[in-house]
Amino acid sequence: MNKVPALFLIILIMSLFSCRHNQQIITRPNILFFLVDDLGWEDTGVPMWTDSVENNRYFRTPNIARLAAEGMKFTQAYASSPVCSPTRTALMTGMNPARTHITNWIPGRGNHPAEDQWLLIPHWRIGGLDHRDVTLPELLKATGYTTVHVGKAHLGRKGTVGANPRHLGFDYSVAASYRGGPGSYYVPYGRIHGLDSQMIDLEEFFPDSLYLNDALTIMALRLLDTLAKHPENPFYFNMWHYAVHAPIQGDPKLMDKYRLPGKTEAQVQYASMVESVDRSLGKILKKLDELGMADNTIVIFWSDNGGLVSHSGPPTTNYPLSSGKGSSHEGGYREPLIVRWPGRVKPGSVCSDPVITDDFFPTVLAITGVRVPDTIRRHLDGTDITPLLLQTGGIERPHPLVWHYPHYWGWKALRVADSTITPFSAIREGDWKLIYTYEKGRCELYNLAEDIGEKHNLAKEKPDVAQKLCGDLRSVLQVMGAQTPIDRETGEAVGLPEFTEYTD
Image (cartoon, rainbow, N blue to C red; front, side, top):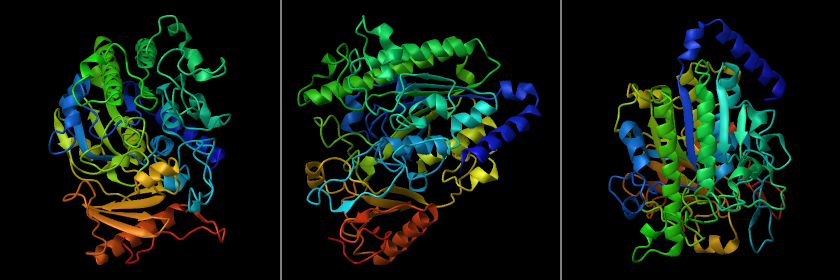
């Protein structure tokens, strides 16, 4: 979609809203999206599984627990990708990475010699979002919302339009740029020779050696104070922390309590990072209460991919899920999701329906009363999950949940140690999940209700189920125009998923 019709659509939406009574716009809810980077499914004190696990008892997150008690917990929520940028751009556009071709973290890991990777990576949108894309904040801004972004963005490559959230529809942007990690959580937050503009916004905190999470939170609280001065304008607010992304550097004030027998230094530091994020959430919830905004603000708590378990300690585990960030298995993209919507979402409720990041775009637009034009709707992969939030019924999807990662994540040693870190596509239908790996054309079939850890590949035992899911996956990827890795010898793209009886 090019930008000329995109701008026309936004102008059309503005004209539609100008016909409404102003009071309708004033009473529309605020949206606060609290995103944690690399937070695993069980990396809080709130159990997402049927049973409590060790992580739930180790991490101290009373504010996340409060949010769950006051809202709805989703136990089968998924990121759109096992890495960050594809998930973040899916949230901004409502389109799956297979459709946008933003399929890796920006700028990604390029091609390496044959002994490192069997296949070449496909052409993909390495630049990230640009003026072709119609984003969620653009549509909301066009209808009277004030739009704010604080923290990590990672929506565009250095030097591109998408590297600056202000070019993507945000009125305010703080400490955001092309970078996917902070460099350091300690001052000067990884700034290199004064050239990294994302941390110039935080220079005032350098003398006090403020921990990065705290600095970002202070900036967020100030912006909420500013927004409170204009109650006639609802707001959309991205509070996207860099934590708990590597480097694993804990908050010195919080680490001692986590030094328990059997815990490694990486786990201690990581746990303090999680608590620091929870503390940030608590301060923001308190500010909403103080400003009288809480009752009209929907708070969404989310993560962009699975917890890091392959290196840097590792700092955590995704048990009972297998593997983690970068993986084709559940640990790579199953996430903690909590939504609080005062007066609408039942406190302490739980939803077990599978949802995905793609769903937030149409859901937020539905909640805020913004009609999605047909020219955009036909490209959407997400579904409005408001019926699940309100417990008024189920939802109908245009296609099953799919994941598409035709890249090599991490260096060869990581992939040798964990064979689930590989170029793949996957699909979920009901309790069944099929993973197709491109290097060997291998199908893996799992029943997640019986085998959440994906230990028993049933492709050989149930070839009919595997063949159907593989065909469905192929069909969805064809419709999306998904790209596949390149064969080194022929220079041609390898085929889309196709079932064979090879299961070893």
